[in-house]
Every structure is written in structure tokens, then in C-alpha cells.
Length: 393
Image 1 (cartoon, rainbow, N blue to C red):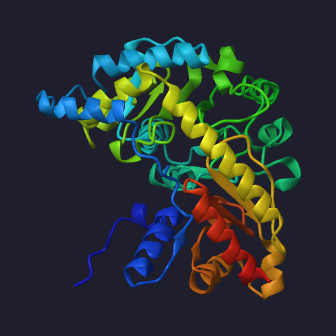
Image 2: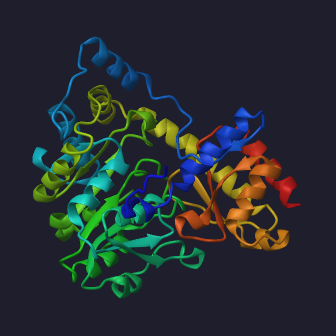
């Protein structure tokens, strides 16, 4: 017997990044020597002082339900972080702690959007934005930004994309998948457009804030455009900067009424984030930040190596990024050289013939590209580049 599922779930597709990771794991289990460059997960262990805080929470019996929206200790650490790093002031009722930043963004869309509302998304985009919009019965609207403009949208493009149906604008800087980031001046120019559209709520995904080597300090949108404070949700988490992906803690600051609505959604889905993880996250945000700087130096070294290596390959072009641990390479010429129809076919040939797993760019709204994660050792990257060089000729 086949059970008919909801129309809602039929609108969305599985995450291509998770699919690539699962495929690589399956081939490895079959004995294939696969190099997996698909997953966006630091290869570092969670710093010891953060892990110890989790262990102490277990030993201290902090293993029961907490407030749905997060424990006061963590909320205060988040408030201090926003003030310290971004110059943003929030009260406890303006902060929500969730089971990862993905959960935060899902809560935002479910609490804000009605059927037919438009979610404006620059492309290339993180794979989950469009499908979350579809799950909320909204319509994703894409603004394409190719290599010729550094994978960043212009104010004119944003103005052209906004309509009376526009309800949410999502901005991810530095970007997964491209590593591109907006300067303060570029954010001010986008903010000037958004100021003319007061119905539009803004969600800024700052997950990679501290994996950063841009020519000027990182700047969040509402930091550059304080007039947008009352309709901006600033989203972040501990997963990437602190190597805490499995701990599942994301958070945001924003307008109190919207944050309360997001908490209501969370209360009827997951309830509180893991109590133990909340204790560890509080220590991560309020403790010594030297571990973040140390990991960032390693990511910058890997970035420089992989970007140079990709640009040395036949038919491949890769722009440097300002942050994240991804390289986003244009492989359209390499595809043509091999007679392959699209980037999915290209990625399939890579994993079967070169034993290197990457994520096709079409999953990010950028056909003809591939995303490689360099959140792995230099030795692994060297080996991967050698296999790609051999495969591409």
C-alpha cells in the first residue's frame, strides 16, 4: 500500500549537500577511496573548554527541559555577542535560541509568511532557502548574480525584484556557497532600496561571520543600516565558528513581536534546544575567542591553496572569497571539454571516475559550477587536486 503524502512535501527536494555526503559515505562503505568535499563541517574538534562545559552540564544534572526560547545564561551571552561584535542592542525578549541556524530560518519563514508571499533570494544561494519558502506556502524569487559581478547582487537588481507581494529578503554574507561578501558601502546601498519597501522583512544569515579574511571588517546589514533595525532578524549560530555542528545551536535577534511568533512555532515543533548544548554555547560565546582565530587562520591558508589549485586546472575558474570554507568554481568549460550536459553529470563523473565528491552548482541556483568544501586537511586537499588534475587532463 502506498501512502499519499502532503502536497507540501512534494514541493521540496532533498538537500543536495546532504545527498552528496550520504552518497560519499555509501561508496566509502563499499571500499571506495572517496574524498568528500561536500559537507560544510569543520574538521576541527569542538574546543576543549566548550566541550568541558557540556560535560559539566551532564554531570551537574542539567538535562531537563529549559525555556522554549533558550536559557537566560545563553541569551545574555548572545546579547553580549551582538553588542560586542555588531554594535547591536537586544533585550532577552528579542532573542530566540533554536536547534541550529537552519531551524532559526525555518521558524522565521513559518512565523512570517502567508500563501503567495514572495521571498527574495540572491543566487547563488544556500540550498535550503527556497525549499523552506515553499514549505511555508510562499514563492521564492531569485536574483541571479554571476561571476561577472562577484556573485553579489546590485541595488538595481534588488529594486527590480521587489513587488507588493515581497515579504522577506534573505541575505547571506559571507555566502555559502561562493564565499563572496558585501562591503559596508554595498550593504548601505542595498539598505537604501529596502528602506523604500517597508513591508519587506529582512533576514540576515551571518553564520560565517568569524570565518572571514575580507579587506575590511565584517559588517552585518543592520549594523550598516540601523534604520532597518525594527524589521531585521539577524541570524547566527555556533556551528561553524566554534566547530559545533552536531551541538545544534542557532540564534537570532530581532523585533520582539516576530521573535515571540517564532518562539510559538518552535514551541509546537521541537520545544527547547538541547539543554547541554545551550550550556556549551554560552561558554563558546562568552569565553576566550582565541580558538576561533586559530581555526580561521587554517581556513584562510586552505582557501588560498584550493583557489590557486582550482585555477590551475583545465577548464576551471574560481574567484577568491572573503570568508566561509567553500570554493565555488565555474566548471562550464571543463564540462564542455568532457562533453557533459550539466553540472550534475559532471559531479557524477567526478565521484565515479576521480573519486572526489563535490556539490553541483545547480543546487545553489548556479548551473555550471561546483562547490568544494575546504573544511578538511591540506593533505586531503592536495590529494583531491591531484585527482582532479588527472581527471581533467
